[in-house]
Length: 120
Image 1 (cartoon, rainbow, N blue to C red):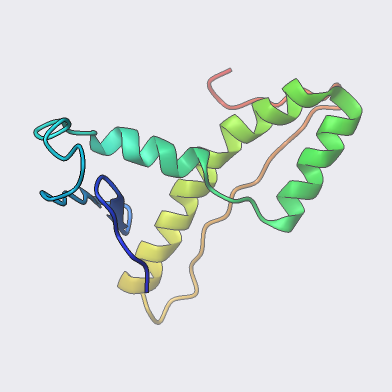
Image 2 (image 1 turned 30 degrees about the vertical axis):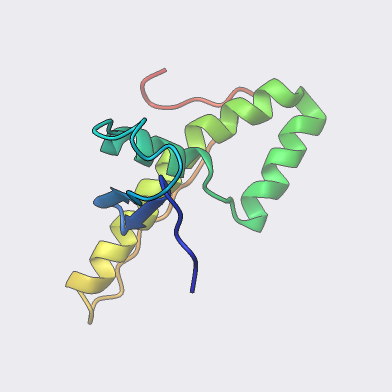
């Protein structure tokens, strides 16, 4: 259980996001009618997504070898990929229950330390 407060966000899955409005709350009238778009909420979820232990080890290695900028660059590129891979796995596990299908994110890092994506 969690207590929800005025202007909290409630995210259900990856498709629905709601903003809690408590009419009696202080300042409730100030933001009434304003909306935070779905993309803003999804971007926030991606930015705050946790990374697993193996990825964290890789990030620490990048930081030690090439500096904070390289590690941050990797995370900025990796988090959205992981977010959507996780979503694909959730959908696949619901739709194809008897199949053993799963997706995963893989990375290739050049010896020079650059992180590249197909569009680079």
